[in-house]
Image 1: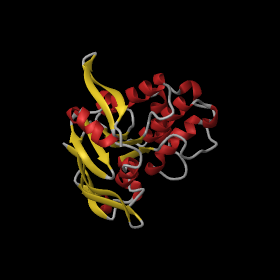
Image 2 (image 1 turned 60 degrees about the horizontal axis):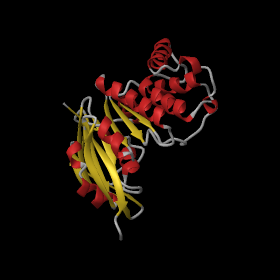
Image 3 (image 1 turned 90 degrees about the vertical axis):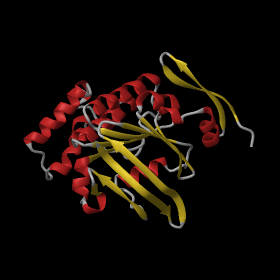
Image 4 (image 1 turned 30 degrees about the horizontal axis):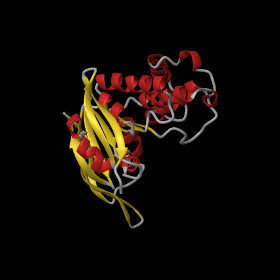
Length: 256
Protein backbone atom coordinates (compact mmCIF):
# COMPACT_ATOMS: atom_id res chain seq x y z
CA UNK A 1 0.00 0.00 0.00
CA UNK A 2 1.45 3.36 -1.07
CA UNK A 3 1.20 5.87 1.77
CA UNK A 4 3.11 8.81 0.27
CA UNK A 5 3.56 9.50 -3.43
CA UNK A 6 5.52 12.47 -4.76
CA UNK A 7 5.64 13.35 -8.44
CA UNK A 8 7.68 15.99 -10.33
CA UNK A 9 8.39 18.02 -7.18
CA UNK A 10 10.27 21.27 -7.63
CA UNK A 11 11.12 23.99 -5.15
CA UNK A 12 13.09 27.23 -5.39
CA UNK A 13 14.20 29.90 -2.95
CA UNK A 14 13.49 33.05 -4.95
CA UNK A 15 14.83 32.04 -8.37
CA UNK A 16 17.43 29.55 -7.12
CA UNK A 17 16.36 25.91 -7.70
CA UNK A 18 16.72 23.72 -4.62
CA UNK A 19 14.76 20.62 -5.64
CA UNK A 20 14.15 19.45 -9.20
CA UNK A 21 12.06 16.57 -10.53
CA UNK A 22 11.85 14.67 -7.22
CA UNK A 23 9.76 11.53 -7.31
CA UNK A 24 9.28 8.92 -4.61
CA UNK A 25 6.84 6.38 -3.22
CA UNK A 26 6.74 5.33 0.41
CA UNK A 27 4.66 2.38 1.51
CA UNK A 28 2.89 1.78 4.80
CA UNK A 29 5.37 0.87 7.52
CA UNK A 30 8.41 1.61 5.36
CA UNK A 31 11.38 3.74 6.35
CA UNK A 32 13.05 5.97 3.78
CA UNK A 33 16.52 7.40 4.44
CA UNK A 34 17.16 10.64 2.56
CA UNK A 35 20.90 11.10 2.21
CA UNK A 36 23.26 13.50 0.48
CA UNK A 37 25.81 16.21 1.24
CA UNK A 38 24.98 19.48 2.94
CA UNK A 39 22.75 21.76 0.85
CA UNK A 40 21.56 18.85 -1.31
CA UNK A 41 17.90 19.53 -0.44
CA UNK A 42 17.17 16.97 2.30
CA UNK A 43 15.60 19.36 4.82
CA UNK A 44 13.78 21.25 2.08
CA UNK A 45 12.23 18.02 0.82
CA UNK A 46 10.91 17.14 4.29
CA UNK A 47 9.47 20.63 4.71
CA UNK A 48 7.75 20.36 1.34
CA UNK A 49 6.21 17.01 2.32
CA UNK A 50 4.93 18.57 5.55
CA UNK A 51 3.74 21.72 3.72
CA UNK A 52 5.96 23.97 5.81
CA UNK A 53 7.21 25.00 2.38
CA UNK A 54 5.03 25.08 -0.72
CA UNK A 55 6.56 23.54 -3.85
CA UNK A 56 6.32 25.57 -7.03
CA UNK A 57 5.53 22.44 -9.00
CA UNK A 58 4.54 18.82 -8.49
CA UNK A 59 2.13 16.85 -6.35
CA UNK A 60 2.27 15.16 -2.94
CA UNK A 61 -0.36 12.54 -2.18
CA UNK A 62 -1.14 10.94 1.16
CA UNK A 63 -3.32 7.85 0.76
CA UNK A 64 -4.09 9.12 -2.72
CA UNK A 65 -5.30 12.54 -1.50
CA UNK A 66 -3.40 15.65 -2.59
CA UNK A 67 -2.04 17.75 0.26
CA UNK A 68 -3.41 20.80 -1.57
CA UNK A 69 -6.88 19.50 -0.69
CA UNK A 70 -6.14 19.22 3.03
CA UNK A 71 -6.09 21.95 5.68
CA UNK A 72 -3.21 22.44 8.10
CA UNK A 73 -5.04 20.65 10.92
CA UNK A 74 -5.80 17.63 8.72
CA UNK A 75 -2.16 17.47 7.58
CA UNK A 76 -1.01 17.64 11.20
CA UNK A 77 -3.26 14.70 12.05
CA UNK A 78 -1.62 12.63 9.32
CA UNK A 79 2.00 13.74 9.62
CA UNK A 80 4.33 14.24 12.55
CA UNK A 81 7.48 16.32 12.05
CA UNK A 82 10.64 16.22 14.18
CA UNK A 83 12.89 19.18 13.27
CA UNK A 84 16.66 19.33 13.53
CA UNK A 85 18.07 19.48 17.03
CA UNK A 86 18.19 23.03 18.33
CA UNK A 87 15.26 24.32 16.29
CA UNK A 88 12.97 26.18 18.67
CA UNK A 89 12.94 26.38 22.45
CA UNK A 90 10.02 26.59 24.84
CA UNK A 91 9.97 26.84 28.66
CA UNK A 92 7.64 23.98 29.47
CA UNK A 93 7.70 20.51 30.98
CA UNK A 94 8.39 17.30 29.09
CA UNK A 95 4.78 16.16 29.51
CA UNK A 96 3.32 19.46 28.31
CA UNK A 97 5.66 19.35 25.31
CA UNK A 98 4.36 15.90 24.38
CA UNK A 99 0.80 17.10 24.97
CA UNK A 100 1.33 19.81 22.33
CA UNK A 101 1.16 17.02 19.79
CA UNK A 102 -2.54 16.68 20.52
CA UNK A 103 -3.36 20.22 19.35
CA UNK A 104 -4.57 19.12 15.88
CA UNK A 105 -7.19 16.91 17.53
CA UNK A 106 -8.80 19.44 19.84
CA UNK A 107 -9.00 23.03 20.99
CA UNK A 108 -6.97 25.17 23.37
CA UNK A 109 -7.90 22.99 26.37
CA UNK A 110 -6.74 19.34 26.49
CA UNK A 111 -9.47 16.74 26.78
CA UNK A 112 -9.28 13.52 28.74
CA UNK A 113 -8.40 11.49 25.65
CA UNK A 114 -5.60 13.95 24.82
CA UNK A 115 -4.09 13.50 28.28
CA UNK A 116 -4.43 9.73 27.94
CA UNK A 117 -2.74 9.70 24.52
CA UNK A 118 0.14 11.86 25.76
CA UNK A 119 0.56 9.65 28.83
CA UNK A 120 0.69 6.53 26.67
CA UNK A 121 3.43 7.98 24.50
CA UNK A 122 5.42 9.13 27.54
CA UNK A 123 5.21 5.57 28.87
CA UNK A 124 6.07 3.99 25.49
CA UNK A 125 9.24 6.08 25.18
CA UNK A 126 10.19 5.56 28.84
CA UNK A 127 9.99 9.25 29.74
CA UNK A 128 8.04 8.98 33.02
CA UNK A 129 11.03 9.79 35.21
CA UNK A 130 11.54 13.17 33.50
CA UNK A 131 7.92 13.96 32.61
CA UNK A 132 7.67 16.91 35.02
CA UNK A 133 11.09 18.35 34.31
CA UNK A 134 11.59 21.48 32.21
CA UNK A 135 12.64 20.54 28.71
CA UNK A 136 15.55 22.96 28.95
CA UNK A 137 17.03 20.93 31.82
CA UNK A 138 17.33 17.57 30.08
CA UNK A 139 20.07 16.12 27.88
CA UNK A 140 20.15 16.34 24.10
CA UNK A 141 19.32 12.68 23.72
CA UNK A 142 16.36 12.97 26.07
CA UNK A 143 15.16 16.09 24.29
CA UNK A 144 15.21 14.31 20.93
CA UNK A 145 13.10 11.50 22.39
CA UNK A 146 10.66 14.11 23.72
CA UNK A 147 10.32 15.73 20.28
CA UNK A 148 9.66 12.32 18.75
CA UNK A 149 7.10 11.69 21.49
CA UNK A 150 5.39 14.99 20.67
CA UNK A 151 5.14 13.94 17.02
CA UNK A 152 3.83 10.49 17.95
CA UNK A 153 1.18 12.02 20.21
CA UNK A 154 -0.38 13.39 17.03
CA UNK A 155 -1.18 9.79 16.06
CA UNK A 156 0.48 10.26 12.67
CA UNK A 157 0.42 7.89 9.73
CA UNK A 158 3.64 9.47 8.42
CA UNK A 159 6.64 10.52 10.53
CA UNK A 160 9.21 12.98 9.16
CA UNK A 161 12.56 13.31 10.93
CA UNK A 162 15.25 15.84 10.09
CA UNK A 163 18.67 14.63 11.25
CA UNK A 164 17.26 12.77 14.27
CA UNK A 165 20.72 11.64 15.44
CA UNK A 166 22.69 14.87 15.02
CA UNK A 167 24.55 15.99 18.16
CA UNK A 168 23.75 12.71 19.92
CA UNK A 169 26.27 10.27 21.36
CA UNK A 170 26.37 6.73 20.01
CA UNK A 171 24.07 5.26 22.66
CA UNK A 172 21.37 7.88 22.14
CA UNK A 173 21.65 7.56 18.35
CA UNK A 174 20.78 3.89 18.62
CA UNK A 175 18.05 4.49 21.21
CA UNK A 176 16.36 7.11 19.03
CA UNK A 177 16.49 5.02 15.87
CA UNK A 178 15.30 1.93 17.74
CA UNK A 179 12.22 3.98 18.64
CA UNK A 180 11.74 4.88 14.99
CA UNK A 181 12.07 1.21 14.05
CA UNK A 182 9.38 0.24 16.58
CA UNK A 183 7.07 2.91 15.23
CA UNK A 184 7.40 1.66 11.66
CA UNK A 185 6.66 -1.87 12.85
CA UNK A 186 3.35 -0.45 14.07
CA UNK A 187 2.59 0.68 10.50
CA UNK A 188 3.79 4.29 10.52
CA UNK A 189 5.65 5.32 7.35
CA UNK A 190 8.87 7.20 8.06
CA UNK A 191 11.11 9.49 6.04
CA UNK A 192 14.28 10.73 7.68
CA UNK A 193 17.12 12.94 6.50
CA UNK A 194 20.31 11.48 7.89
CA UNK A 195 24.05 11.97 7.39
CA UNK A 196 25.38 8.71 8.83
CA UNK A 197 25.38 6.23 5.95
CA UNK A 198 25.76 3.20 8.19
CA UNK A 199 22.77 4.18 10.29
CA UNK A 200 20.84 4.73 7.05
CA UNK A 201 21.74 1.21 5.94
CA UNK A 202 20.81 -0.30 9.29
CA UNK A 203 17.48 1.41 9.86
CA UNK A 204 15.94 2.02 6.44
CA UNK A 205 14.08 0.00 3.83
CA UNK A 206 14.65 2.47 1.03
CA UNK A 207 17.34 5.04 0.26
CA UNK A 208 17.04 8.29 -1.69
CA UNK A 209 20.38 9.87 -2.65
CA UNK A 210 20.20 13.59 -3.42
CA UNK A 211 22.86 15.61 -5.19
CA UNK A 212 22.39 19.31 -5.86
CA UNK A 213 18.62 19.00 -5.41
CA UNK A 214 18.17 16.11 -7.82
CA UNK A 215 17.74 12.40 -7.26
CA UNK A 216 21.05 10.74 -8.03
CA UNK A 217 19.92 7.24 -7.05
CA UNK A 218 16.91 5.65 -5.38
CA UNK A 219 15.96 2.15 -4.36
CA UNK A 220 16.92 -0.37 -1.73
CA UNK A 221 20.18 -0.59 0.18
CA UNK A 222 21.92 -1.77 -2.96
CA UNK A 223 22.08 1.82 -4.27
CA UNK A 224 24.70 2.70 -1.67
CA UNK A 225 27.65 1.53 -3.78
CA UNK A 226 31.25 2.81 -3.69
CA UNK A 227 30.67 4.38 -7.09
CA UNK A 228 27.57 6.27 -5.98
CA UNK A 229 29.19 7.38 -2.72
CA UNK A 230 32.16 8.79 -4.66
CA UNK A 231 29.91 10.55 -7.18
CA UNK A 232 27.65 12.10 -4.55
CA UNK A 233 30.06 12.83 -1.69
CA UNK A 234 33.43 13.03 -3.43
CA UNK A 235 34.81 10.35 -1.13
CA UNK A 236 36.34 6.99 -1.95
CA UNK A 237 34.75 4.28 0.16
CA UNK A 238 34.28 0.54 0.27
CA UNK A 239 31.10 -1.31 1.20
CA UNK A 240 31.71 -4.59 2.99
CA UNK A 241 29.56 -7.19 4.69
CA UNK A 242 30.03 -7.12 8.47
CA UNK A 243 27.87 -8.74 11.14
CA UNK A 244 25.36 -9.77 8.50
CA UNK A 245 24.80 -6.26 7.13
CA UNK A 246 26.55 -3.89 4.71
CA UNK A 247 29.03 -1.44 6.21
CA UNK A 248 30.39 1.71 4.56
CA UNK A 249 34.10 2.28 5.21
CA UNK A 250 35.28 5.76 4.12
CA UNK A 251 38.79 5.83 2.73
CA UNK A 252 39.77 9.27 1.41
CA UNK A 253 38.35 12.39 -0.26
CA UNK A 254 38.64 12.44 -4.03
CA UNK A 255 41.02 15.12 -5.29
CA UNK A 256 39.24 17.96 -7.07
